[in-house]
Amino acid sequence: MRRNKVDIITLGCSKNLVDSEHLLRQLQAQGFTTEHNPQRVNGEIVVVNTCGFIADSQEESIDTILSLCEAKKAGKLRKLFVMGCLSERFAADLMESIPEVDRYYGKFNWTEMLHDLGHKYLPELASERVLTTPPHYAYLKVSEGCNRFCAFCAIPLITGRHKSVPPEVLLNEVRRLAASGVKEFNVIAQDLSSYGLDLEGRMMLPELIDRMADIAGVEWIRLHYAYPTQFPLDLLDVMARRDNVCKYLDIALQHCSDTVLDKMRRRIDRDTTERLIHTMRDRVPGIHLRTTLMVGFPGEGEREFEELLEFVDTMRFERMGAFAYSEEAGTYAAAHYSDEISAEEKQRRLDTLMERQASISQETQNAKVGATMRVIIDSEEADYYVGRTEFDSPEVDPEVLIKKDRKLTVGDFYPVTITEALPFELIGTVQPS
Image 1 (cartoon, rainbow, N blue to C red):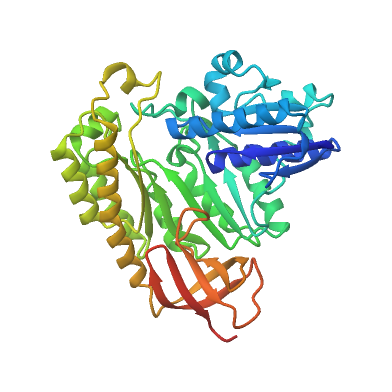
Image 2: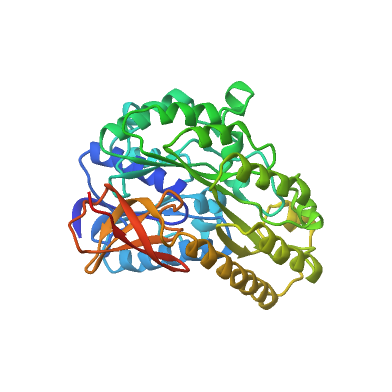
């Protein structure tokens, strides 16, 4: 056990990761040694930043906490703190069931941890953080919370109502990160489409991205977690006009059936959804759309599921993820619908949907063979370099594997000719300078 060392373990999404990065900065400023997601916990203090989105992520968080409680009993750490979405939502239950944790913090009061450690929160460092990503890319969280209140989603119960970070605060953060060598900014929010509505009563995302694109050193801007209802179409003009705004958009659609969308309280129908997708592809040629779909929601019969399969076949999303519905306490769906579809049937539908998408993904990859693409190098492995194109977000999208026939610099861009396509990887060769 290393004295005065804090190990932080982050579970869940990149929005949680940003919170951990802010905590790391505060701790380091107070003289603590820190480590993020260590291979082996050896600090005297461990902080678990939990996820509470769906049952699987809740289970992962609880299992992690319990294993660390055992380590604490064995004398391998002195204090165990828990923060994040799970403890924001279930603090009372957790305190009763796992009292070995020294203190539970929510998603927003983690600043009190500094006081509990005998220090104070430093407001002058509020916008600073220690990057846990490779130094050439970072996540930029532009808002918290959500006002949409979809029937299945517990996020508003955890994070509260939508709250945008003022644009000048964000732009100053981008300037500082770009000056330190960050080239790629992955913009994230629970509801990216609504950015600015709570500040000035208008959708300010197009303006924010346009101004970000002007900042020296910003090579790529990639957009995650837009909402289809009331999508700010002016954003497409910015994306088409700006070379450093990636032709990529992560927009969760959840379903296509009007019946299911209505029960989900998504406030959109299939026709409107398809027109939006066509508009995106018309106004931003070559755009890659990543979406997330859900199977097994109450009211999804075999007919609605077949409609979803046909929708995926027709729309041919370049990137897609999916998950099975799980009932979340406190949501509209839990209160008003019966979760009657069996776990086995949900899994069957999920497997069928992802098998259908696999062939589409392969076709998307095949179309890149022979093309020369701008690739950023993320890492160096024993036999190859690993990079990404503008159409690939870190961690979730395909990578480009490049043979080590010349020395490349991690964090730099190179022209790479694609020679082979696999479902989730591209193989390429760097073009001579």
